[in-house]
Length: 552
Image 1 (cartoon, rainbow, N blue to C red):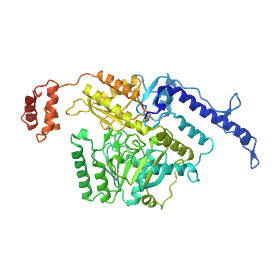
Image 2: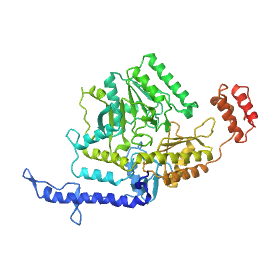
Image 3: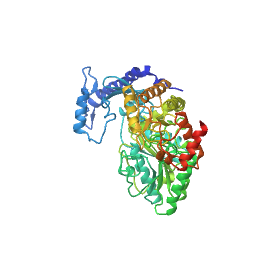
């Protein structure tokens, strides 16, 4: 089930094939230009050579080449001309940010030609510079690129291909350029259909960087944590952080939502959530949550939006879309990032009823659904099928999850490991009972893994989750590399303090939850702690102290 594209031996052949495709296209165009564009007249006027193309010494048309900047020159120009809010990844590390020059499969190469295992970039879904995707883009770009107001086979074929992978009645497609645009349009469709403005979102969510999508993105890294008018924030259903079971977290989430809806002050235009919360800390939605939230939304006249921008296209392995395991069908689905494998391509898929409700305005997007983007999208879908990459995401994802859970057993800072196919989150804490977030430790591990040639990121509301979403051609040997390097980086951190403070314990445990006390007591005994660091008379302390004595 593993694509040969994922093998390191393909790296140079990929580059040669990609270069070969581009060279062949240039030579083909050279002949066409010489025979028809240069010598032929159009309406009596000789067609000029393209302005951005010069003759090469061989006589073929070749693109203009620029000298590669040094690392220092690049940094200087970046500081001078780019906005300071456009921050570079790893900018605060000792060696500074990465200057990347090429990619192949699941690997990236910097200006020193050093190879990195890419566990961050979920945009190049089927692998960096996949030769079939490169060829599809180059071939279509050499023929025609225009907007979607003209008839073209690529746009209707891709719309059909995308709709065929959706459950009924999701058959109506809008093409856009990014996940932000997709979610922005989804909000417009929902508000136009319902005649309402209020959108319910989930704490820790990120849905884009436009004004409308930031308004429903409580993820504080990219926006203010204050929710503007028209947006209502719900509690994130994080089973690990909330300390309950999946059923109890689902029940409390539904109760919160039902209470807000019953108040009647803000009737929903829509409820939107990622099918697996990525920027929110790789939080998996508990069983029954999505179904219950959808039922409440619809019973109060709202639409349901599944944000699949980061989770879709087979990444979770078991299904093509991450909402499918929950047994629901959304009213609107948004897709993006992996759709174009690095080329700007995204879409909104909805029902005919919802799309026809917006016929009072013409929708137009200059680049959305252009022939080149659609050629790329068609090839990405074909590659996922032909190379059995969804199956690879399932099998390799299960393997890497097993390895990460083994790391958890060895490393006390690993509080939780969350996996869905090739979407992995490792949450670091300073205390396994109180779950105090270890953002500093996560940043250290990320930097040290980079030094060892493995790229991961940190995320979540508390910045303490190591987040990994590699290309889905990720192989078993890559999984081993990832786990081994993470294990080594974690081993460099100092040991945690074993003693627990009473006030933290009281925040975690409750005298009516003996199972929680048993777990706390077992942990204390396992680590050689026979008594609490402070004494008191609260029920939580007494219960745990008694269980420690019993277990010893």
